[in-house]
Image 1: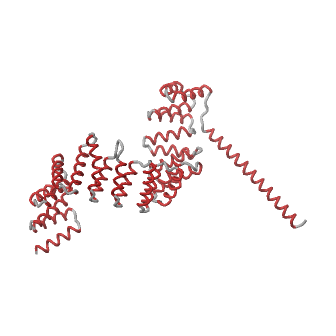
Image 2: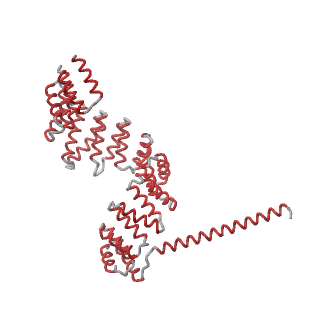
Image 3: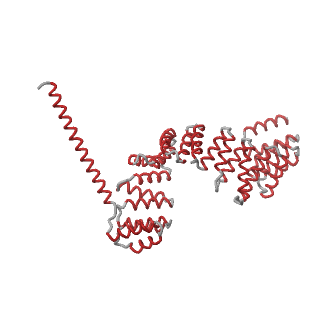
Length: 443
C-alpha cells in the first residue's frame, strides 16, 4: 500500500472515531437533558383534573377579583389536596401583604411535598421581605443541595448573602447564575455589589462598564460605577458616570446629590448647585442631605451658592413640612449664609431669633460672640462665649474664643487660665502653641 493510501486510511479512521465520539457526547447530552427534565418534573406537584380547573379559575380571577380567587382556594385547600393549591393560596396572601398567612400556606405546601422548589423559593422571598435573612438562606440552601438550582434561585441566594454582608458566597452565587443566564443584568448588578464590598474596584468597574453598554437606562448601574471609580480615587471619572446618568434622565436623587458633592469638592460650584437643585426637586427630598449640601457651600465660603438651596428649604418650611429641629437647623444655616455675605446686622437678628427658640444652641451662641467681637463689643463677646462654655459639647471651643477676647482686652493671665482649661478638655496643637506664646509674653 502506498504512503498516500495509508494516510487516507488513517484519516478515515480518525474521522470515524470523531463521529462516534460526537454521537456518544450527543447521546450523553440527550440523556442529561432528559434526566434533568425528569428531575425537575419530580419536584413539581401533581394535580387532578378538578384541581387544574380550580387553578385555571384562580388565574382568571386573581387579575381583578383577587378576593374571590382567595375564597375559591380556601374552600378547596384540604389535607389531601395537591400542594399546588396551598402554593397558589400562599401567592395570593403574599400579594395581599398578609405575610403570616402566606407563610402558613407555603409551609403547608412543603409539608405535603418537601421537594416543591418553587414553594420553597417563594417562602424564602417572603422571609426576606420580613428581613429574616437567616431563615431565608436556609430555605435557599435546601434547594441548592437537594433540588435543581435555577438562575432566579441563585440570584436570590446572592442577594441574601449581600444582605448578610457576606460578599464572597454572594459572588459565587451570582457567577453561577450568570453561567445559566449570561444576559441577566440583575445578576451582574449583584456581582458588582459583591466585588465592591470586597474592594475589588477595578473588576467591578469593568463589569459595570460592559453591562452599561447594553443597559444604559439602569440608573443604579451608573451609581455603582461611580462608587467603583471613587474606590480607586478617581473623582473625575466618577463625575463622568453620574453625569451620564443625569443626562440620560436616570439619575436617582441620592446619585445627583453625590454628583453635587463631587462638584463641590472640585470647586465647580455652579455645576454643584445644578446637581443639588435637581436632586432635591422631588416631592419628598432628603432634608438631611439638603442641609448637608448647604453646609458644604458654607464651609467653602460660598454663601451665594448656598442661597439657592436655602430657597428650596424655605419652600418646604412654608409647606409646614419641617419639624421643629429642622426649622432650627434651617434658621442656623440662613444666619451663617447671611453672616458670610457680610450682613452682620441681619445675621445678628437671625442668631437672636434662633436662640429665643433654642437657648442651648451652642453654635449660635458662639457665632453671636464672634459678631460682637468683630463689632468691637468685647464685653458682650466675653459674656456670649462664657454662656456657650456652660454647654459641655461646646465648652473647649467657647473657652478658646473667650481667651482670644481676653487677650484683646490685655487680660493675659485670665486668657492663660481659660486656654489651660480648654486644653485639659480637648488638647489641640494650635492652642498649645498659642498658650506657649502667651506664657512667654506674660513673663
